[in-house]
Image 1 (cartoon, rainbow, N blue to C red):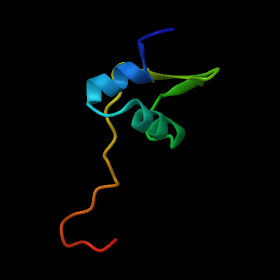
Image 2 (image 1 turned 45 degrees about the vertical axis):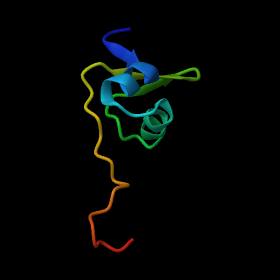
Image 3 (image 1 turned 120 degrees about the vertical axis):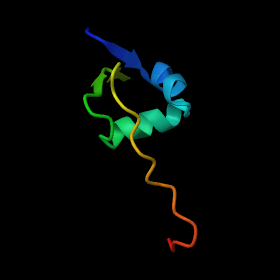
Amino acid sequence: MGDFITVKEAAEKWGISTRRVAVLCVECRIEGAKKIGSMWFIPADAEKPDDNRKKNKGEKA
């Protein structure tokens, strides 16, 4: 299937939860991620997307 990793492997690699990786996949934020059946497969060389949830100090929501 090529050089793909699982959601669990990506979570360990990037230091985030598996749930967060799954959400990033659903939001199409990981380039090249593919869903086969109920599992996501992420290119091994994919970069961790920026976390747009974080706000700068003093910035209003």
